[in-house]
Image (tube, rainbow, N blue to C red; front, top):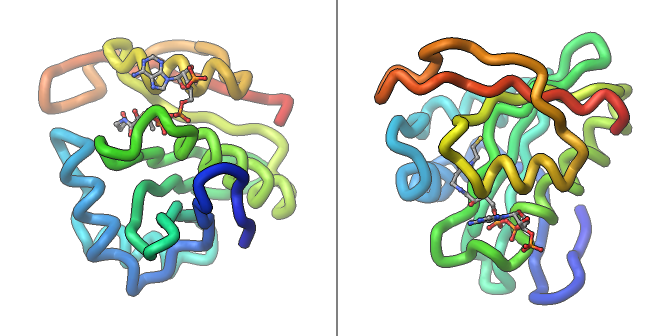
Length: 154
Ligand SMILES: CC(C)(COP(=O)(O)OP(=O)(O)OC[C@H]1O[C@@H](n2cnc3c(N)ncnc32)[C@H](O)[C@@H]1OP(=O)(O)O)[C@@H](O)C(=O)NCCC(=O)NCCS
């Protein structure tokens, strides 16, 4: 748990009880949102690391998650509520997530992102992720490819 500089942002582990609030942010962020039950399961799974960002009043502003396996991490979600964007919440979440998984022995991270998602591509680029291939027509809602990114020097 850590307190970020700036706006009193509080980063902490996601608990299964947070699933309802997280689902609200998820619905505001994605065309094919994960369900509340998915977050409940993910937060309860010991092979994952899920963090959330809260405002000083306890409102969930965003979250980020990762599956951890054999020294590698696959980032599954990074999302910030529309009204909280461009205030370094995503940066704070990714910074904390990387530190958390490094402490569990992770040395390389991968993720998938839409080529049309300029905000996410810019964020991941700042964290040293580099494109390493594509999954053709990966996203079922519009048939968009996924760009596979890796950072092997976390
Ligand atoms: C991508 C996302 C998580 C970024 O969160 P955020 O809290 O707004 O990001 P930050 O404020 O920490 O921004 C960090 C950097 O990312 C880049 N960035 C973020 N939003 C951007 C935008 N709309 N356009 C261009 N670059 C952007 C910038 O380089 C920014 O640095 P700067 O503020 O110094 O210019 C957020 O836009 C989001 O939730 N999008 C919808 C969900 C999503 O697409 N998640 C990723 C799925 S792969």
